[in-house]
Length: 297
Image 1 (cartoon, one colour):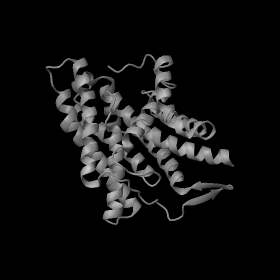
Image 2: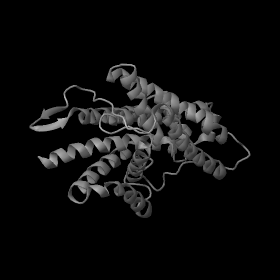
Image 3: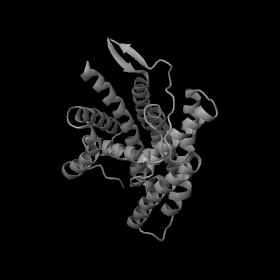
Image 4: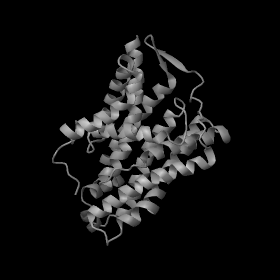
């Protein structure tokens, strides 16, 4: 029974890591850069849900909707104001542009943390769970309803995003732009709009993870850094070229991490993510589901 409980916790944690990693992968595939501000989108969305629920008295479902809209808007604004001006600067070479964008995301990470402290301060806060019933029994196994919600929403969102890229016109344009930006522009695709949509969708992935995690963790302005590391490890493990791979990478991360903490040392759980990143980059940089030939152009 203990193993089943640990598995449920590990899977739900892994779903959160997978969602955060998915947001990182979307931006990386679109522009070839890691978004170091992605953890702050996780944090800001959690606080947006908290504000809507606690201060304005909205239900958890409405608070989640408000926070998702907020996350999308924040992602679009960040891309338009802080990323696009650098990307459109023709005086910079490609390498210099990518370095400048990475540094911009680091600056955004610091700035968003600072801005979050203005309304919310440094004190920790907690968002109530989505359901009044805290646990549910499935085949004799007692599960947290919030963790069950995390698993269901994460699976549905991952499948929806996969279908979005394979079945919709906008999704296909986003894929075309990520594979060949110059070619996409030649056939009339507005790459500026595509980049905005990509950042918005990536922010939704991080935002949904933040909203779902909020009832299980304490909210504070620095909470995004830890989740960024976990999401990056999931993306490295699964492979930056695979949506499903990142989700699987998150699941592996969550399950191994929880057993690592339970049977070895809880205090060492947070070192598992950086170890995964280092090992994968050294021995299989394309990840478990990536391909060495999959290079962004």
